[in-house]
Amino acid sequence: MSLFSSSHFGLPRLKPLSSKRSHIVSVLDIGSTKVVCMIGRLTPREESQVLPNRTHNIEIIGIGHQRSRGIKTGVIADLDALENVVRLSVDAAERMAGLTVDSLIVNVSAGRLGSDIYTATIDLGGQEVESNDLKKVLAAACQQSLRQDRAVLHSLATGYSLDGERGIRDPLAMFGDSLGVDMHVVTAERAALRNLELCINRAHLSVEGMVATPYASGLAALVDDEVELGCAAIDMGGGTTTISVFAEGKLVHTDAVSLGGHHVTTDLARGLSTRIEDAERLKVVHASALANSSEERELISIPPIGEDERDQPTQVPRALVSRIVKARIEETLELIRDRIQRSGFSPIVGKRVVLTGGASQLTGLPDVARRILARNVRIGRPMGVSGLPTAAKGPAFSTAVGLMIYPQVADMETHAAGSGLLSSLGGNNSRIGRVGQWLKESF
Image (cartoon, rainbow, N blue to C red; front, side, top):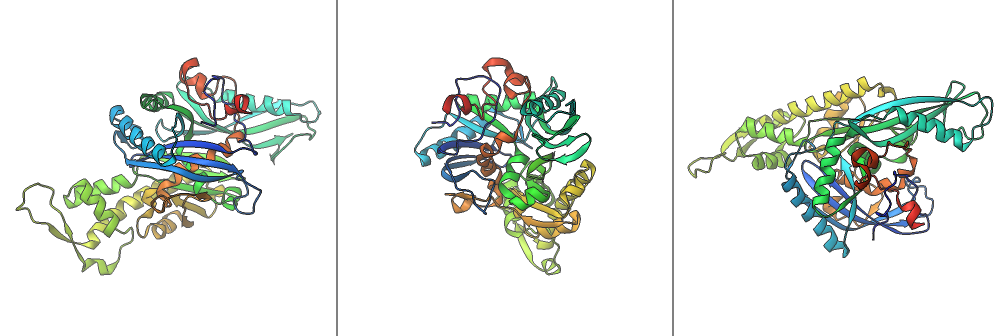
């Protein structure tokens, strides 16, 4: 039984999970390397010093994952192939959990994610701020973000101002002449979202809601102090690397570059003239992002690319493998550094960066990242979730776990009339954007 209802086709009005009830949540992380389905049981939890912003304990009761097919740098390239992988992943998770999934929360990497801040101000005439005024100013900011070709994934108020004084967290009941808000809006191209929904519908499933990949991975990998004080989460996936910046408990910026772990593998396959799967194994077993003088003397065997049995493996210094890897890793990190710098959020990120995602597990990566980003770096693994098999406890599963956490923070978002995914993606028969629809029907 889904915690969201599918009978009501209104706009998503995201409300907190019931603090008195348990819920079953199903999520799907579609990446360039793997597709993961997780089914979790969310049970209300007492307030705690550990992860104090979480309202529910999460226990994973079903998980299924498959190697990705039909997706390239986050973009769907072959609908049939991807549909098949989605079916297999969901089927495995259902079997393990002993229940059937009908709808899922899905991540979005494609569609050229946009991240913009919109500001709106309304006149108060010296009166105190009422909840209606808050609604009015939030709606005014949301309205500015509406565009024909793009759909709103997230809209979060990052801060209020009263009479020009900024940095106010909650202006309710305060007096002033004008009330302003800064709204962070994350958007994606509609066509990409439609294709994503189409793929899931073809597997006889519906989309509960969509979450930008950088938001999900940040929710899973960052601790509360990092989210509060300002921090960037860098999710290094197979086809894309995404950036999310959090401050004062909220997502304030996202970005993505089309480079990831798979590009490192391809470089190795080309540079060493070997097959992609052999290059991937070399990367995992032998590669390091740091050059080491002892690697010059150590030889490793490179399997030949052809099928001819007379082709002998070639011997190359291990240092050559690391040089190829290092060049691509440095390029990716320099690109990330420049994107953070250009975004204007560099001071908010401060000295804290968390690396997560499958490609973050490369040997020596934190050291190279510290040097290039000139910040403290740690590897972030998904936190605060029980029931994960050992193989799924690493950074490669941060996005999937973040999707599981998302319903607990969904109520922080505001949607203007007409800005929800439903209205923007396909009129009344679209099923996207129903995260939070549980409000009217369930409680």
